[in-house]
Image (cartoon, rainbow, N blue to C red; front, top):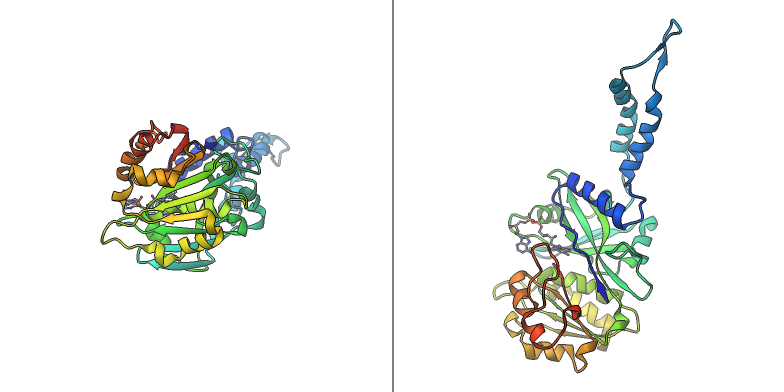
Length: 340
Ligand SMILES: Cc1cc2nc3c(=O)[nH]c(=O)nc-3n(C[C@H](O)[C@H](O)[C@H](O)COP(=O)(O)OP(=O)(O)OC[C@H]3O[C@@H](n4cnc5c(N)ncnc54)[C@H](O)[C@@H]3O)c2cc1C
C-alpha cells in the first residue's frame, strides 16, 4: 500500500506557521499547539491579575494593555534571542551545514547533521495521515529550507537514509530561483533555517515483487532515499532515470549517486538511462516484469513528461485518473503513484 497527502508548498513563513500549526493539530501528536503558541500561552497566564499596591496602600490597576505589553517583553525577547536548534516539522530551527559539494554549476549537495534528540523523527516516522509507520513501512520524507529575509520556503528531499545521522540534499539552482540561490551561496559551517522532516509518501515494500521508479533531474531524490531505506529483504527495483534533454548537463553521473545505489543494492537494482522519447509501452512492460499485479510504479517527472506516461496530477495536486502508457499496459490506478 502507498499513502500520501499533498501538502501545499507554503510561500510565506507566517502562512506556513499557521498552516503547519493547523496541520500539526490535525495530524501530528503535538496536542494541537506548536512550541511558540505554548510559550505564549504560558506567558499569558500570570498576566490576567497583574496589579500593584501603591504607596497609599490602595490597589492601583495598571491599564491592562500596558501591563500586558510590559510583562510580555522579557518573554518576547527570550523567544526572539534564544537559539532554536530543536529540529521540528512545525517550527523553523537554525542548523549548521556540515559540508557542501558542488556537483555541477547548478547542483549543490549539502549535508546537515541531525541533532540526536531529533533522530526519532526519522527512525520512527509519521506518515502523511498522521499515524506512525509500521516497522515494515518505509516513509520517504522531505525538509523545508527557509529564506527568512524574504519569507519563503521550498521543499527538498534527502537522497540518503537520514537514520545515518545527517540529511544530504541536492539543491538545484534555477534561473531567478530564490531559495536555490540562497543555498548555493552557503558554505560549510554556515547556518541554514530548516524544518522537517515532513512525510512525502510511504510504501510497504513487502506488498510488491517489483518497484519501478521513473524520474528525471532532481526528481531522482525521493527514489535515492527510498532505495537507501529499503530492508535487506526487498523487491526488485527498476530505476528509470531519463537522460537529460540534449545540451543539458547530466550531473547525476558526476555525482556518483547512481553508482553508490547500485553498489548498495547489487542485483536488486536495475538502472536504465533512456532518453525521454523511449518511455514506451514496451519499455515500461519490460521494467514492470512478468507479474504486473505485484508491481508498483512511482513517477517523479515534470508535467509534460508525466502526462503521456500516466496522466497529470490534478490542480489541487491529487493523483487524478490513470491514463497514458501505464494505463495502456494494464496497470490499475492504485499501482501508480505520481509525485509532484
Ligand atoms: C516534495 C518536493 C520535494 C522537492 N525536492 C527537491 C530536491 O530535492 N532538490 C531540488 O533541487 N528541488 C526540489 N524540489 C523543488 C524545490 O522545492 C523548488 O521548487 C526549486 O528548488 C525552485 O525553488 P527556488 O526558490 O530556487 O526557485 P523559485 O523562486 O521557486 O522559482 C524561480 C523560477 O524557476 C522556475 N523553476 C522552479 N523549479 C524549476 C526547475 N526544477 N527547473 C526549471 N525551472 C524551475 C519557477 O517556475 C520560477 O519561474 C522539490 C519540490 C517538492 C514539491
